[in-house]
Image 1 (tube, rainbow, N blue to C red):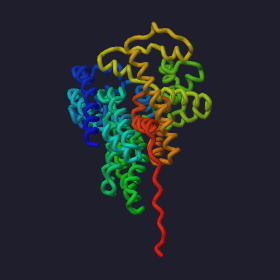
Image 2: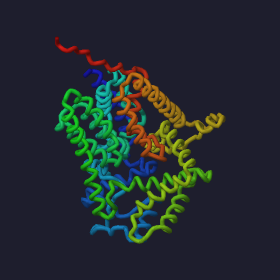
Image 3: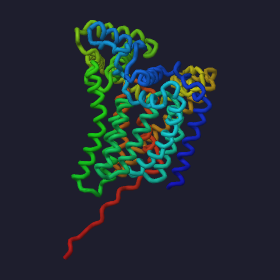
Image 4: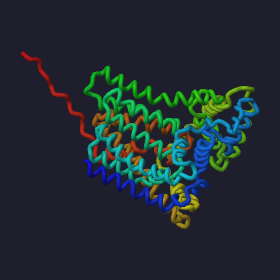
Length: 464
């Protein structure tokens, strides 16, 4: 199978390099205007290089400025260090460290190149994972080809965002779990997944799949050795997150790996539920919701109280108050998560402003207005159709695997899909689908080439 894998790597690398050298190589920061998360990552990398500190001189963004004011007013905002830098707790250090390795802002082109190489290599890892889960060789290769050529995977590899490194490290770690059989070997799998969790705090959601893979590959070993290997993988994986949570606690942000969960739950989850309940557009009304929700926190916040914990409590209370609306928002977000495209980010790589045409929404309402179609709309529509087809085939593949009693394959793919989908509520963006897209590709390939039924162990009879 060596020749198909070499071809897969080469073909995966070509479109990534083509996009890199025709777009962001010359102007690596051009995407900032259309990717508001990117400047923060790169600024943190630059600060690491200049001050050896994971922090920032000031906050930016509507939500972050609101939270900063709340913390300052109730006395929970830690003071700046000697360089005037405030400790960062919203983002984890993995991706800024990666960017800092190549020189921060000035090294962005090289970082993109490394991301392209890792993205192409991770397609090979996905083939290995699929084979270890019991897929037919053809289905495993198709899954790898889908990852190699999907436009979202290609686009993410040339962006200053976490998804490329996050997915690559995860797939390498899962492939290591499929390759090793000893407790010592599982250190590598746990290490890669642990590092993934420092790139984005959701990295530990890959652990169930890693444990399934490890259990299958060490099936011939004694049960005690299998449990030991699993324990080693889990222990090594959680250590980086525990260490970073301790760092955040010491820095005055509480014993948490990141504050992103609480803040997104409140300022996006609760905000969207309120907007949906009032019949407002989620996105255009978001600034007003941020102001409203901040005032709500300010009215309840006590001196010295943890702002992030209160935000989580208030978000959950909002969901309990409006359960039907919350469910409606969740369904809408999940549908968008399944079919959303990244044409806007792809256009931004070339300095082109992407404006959604609304054509697809009009079609759903029974209206057809071709005058709304533009060049980028003609890119977005097939992109959305491809994502919808993959989601449909993945559902069919899941059923076919269950019928054939390939339970390791079913659970290893289904668990991360469910966990990541729940964790992204209510922001249904394609880049948040990327972490579980490899498993959709495996299941989609199984819809076309279902795995063989497990063979029953041969009957043995006692010697006379």
